[in-house]
Length: 302
Image (cartoon, rainbow, N blue to C red; front, side):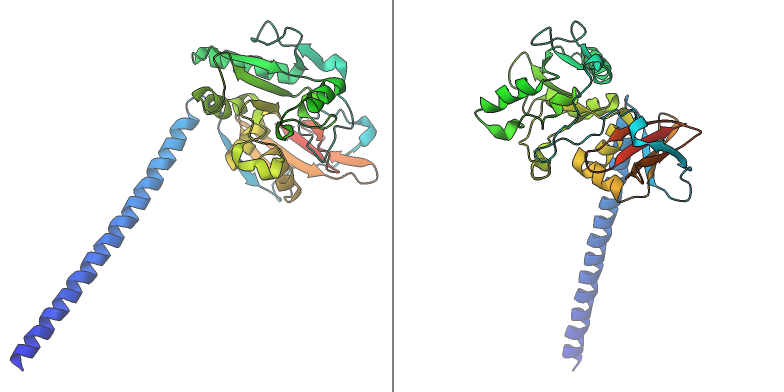
């Protein structure tokens, strides 16, 4: 009996040791995860302080300002910055020619007659200057605004139409999209492509067709195609990993978002017209963009 009792006691001791070992392993794993989270948070904070504007987004209702001033649709100055154009949605209203401006000589170009919407042009100039400061000297603009005829010719002659939109369905026809290539070869998989994706939102430009969003955009991965949406919108889209389709859906499903950006409060609201009117704030600066989805996005700030 004493021999049996001794074996049973040793068995209990082994079980206790195994439990202590298991507990130690679990505790070590938990600590490792916690340390990783803290390290990642600090890394992201450091990235945010390296030249990027900080952005804090929250969905709001009770703190959202009153958008109570009627604005007839006929009086809207449509920026089209957030107008969704894809294989299913056409541009409908072409860009006003007076808003287009050449981007050369401020940017290296394939042809000196390449133009962009004046706001996108300004953003592209700043992005190019930032690239030069970071000693990236081999970027050039291969394409900007395209006419309907130019887009039709490109589409009809394309060897792979996964990369080309039909005429009337291209962001290039808005004057807001630009193709940025390298003088030294393909941009795909390069450090320059990564730099553009990370830095372009600081200037209001987003990568329209990321690799992991092909099922949503309906376009094959294009690391060269950037489209102007505005700095605050680009920052929110980058933060949430949205393409424009997803961003518009996100805004449709909220009562509005408040964004702290560049030390200002921004209020972004999706509205469908009521009796041919939308509602805007009376005490803040704002702009309005059509979305091509039946509503408008009002962006206000103060």
